[in-house]
Amino acid sequence: MALIVQKFGGTSVGTVERIQHVAEHALAAQAQGHQIIVVVSAMSGETNRLVQLATQINPIPYSREYDMLIASGEQIAVGLVSLAINTLAEKKGLIKAGESRSRPLLGHQIGIRTDSVFSKARIEGIDTRLLRDELALGHIPVVAGFQGVDIENNITTLGRGGSDTSAVAIAAAIQADDCEIYTDVDGIYTTDPRMYAGARKISRISYDEMMELASLGAKVLQIRSVELAAKHGVPLHVRSSFSPVEGTRVVSREQLGDHLEKVVVSGVTSDASQVKFTLRGIQDRKGLLADIFGSLSKNAIDVDIIVQDVASNGNLSLSFTVSHTDALKAKKVLESLTPRDLSTVEILEEPGLVKISIVGVGMQNHPGVATKMFSLLSEAGISIKLVTTSEIKISCLIEGTHAKAAVATLHQGFELDRTE
Ligand code: ADP
Ligand code: ASP
Ligand code: MG
Image (cartoon, protein in one colour):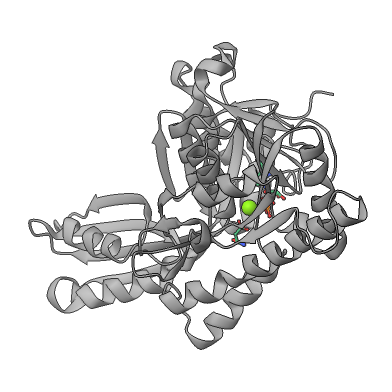
């Protein structure tokens, strides 16, 4: 008997029929002798609808009220899924009328405690007692993903795609044997299969590579879920809720063995959410950069690529990118610094950019990968605005209109296309 956390994403609970399928699936796994905890996202489109409503009132989100609102999609989903499990269990004769086989639970009910950074909250701890009690009763707890509660009892949310992180955090806290992420694709691919038809399914991938892919735009898993899984050694299995085929296992580099080191590039990603800010004509002073980036970070704005240049007159020019959801807030922060430090500075904002990246642990042992990437893009007539690298990835910022062509070029150029 195994203890399994099964997480179902938005599309997997997108209609009443899909929800009934989830109920069927969870009961079937339980009938095989396993203990099952289900974690669900809001029905597809629901969180976007709620975000839309909020931004019509205030374009800068991130507040207690905003999180209270956008967490509500998951409450609907757990209610429906749990209702479906109980109804089906009764139909199958597993329980009598009025009994239950499942219990819907919100984040605060199972003590998913987070910090108070609204819309990007981090989980600080989970109290597993109620979950264990429910399992001991033979129930299938159905937990709302994406949400938690802070020290002041405010509802918080974990960032878009955060139900993945809820599932992994629960799996880690309760020491589950497996964490299955059911989604609308049948695994992790070499690139987004909706963006490029030649994408190939990967059977196993390391946490490290998946972390890079997720942080660079492969939204199939939220980055924090992979970080947590790596930290606690939670085995992840990304698979389809529409078909029973084996998906992709995310495992440690040791479990992967060294054959993968031979694969130079494992995946290509594109992240369309980039806005580039350029500050021109900065008169430098000691600590100025720390002040600028300190103010951005105090406002929970994640800065990505940073490039600094010194002009011939000694003035500084600074470029950096942020996610488009943070752009408005970032601009306000920069403007608030204007009177003291940036009064003569020109602030340019360039939206609509895309970060294209290649990822692979094998890159470390193969020189010339960056050169090949730049040549491939240049041959395709795509110009590069900024570049950033780490041990196992190279990213280039390009014009958004070139995103699809760039993914195809790199995917083919690094020989990732389907082999069959
Ligand atoms: P869910 O609602 O189940 O959480 P998401 O929409 O968050 O699903 O994530 C699944 C989507 O991730 C897929 O539909 C696919 O378009 C996208 N995706 C991006 N990159 C990849 C990749 N490398 N492999 C698989 N899917 C990817
Ligand atoms: N419903 C949330 C979102 O749309 C969380 C999730 O889907 O994981 O971002
Ligand atoms: Mg998701």
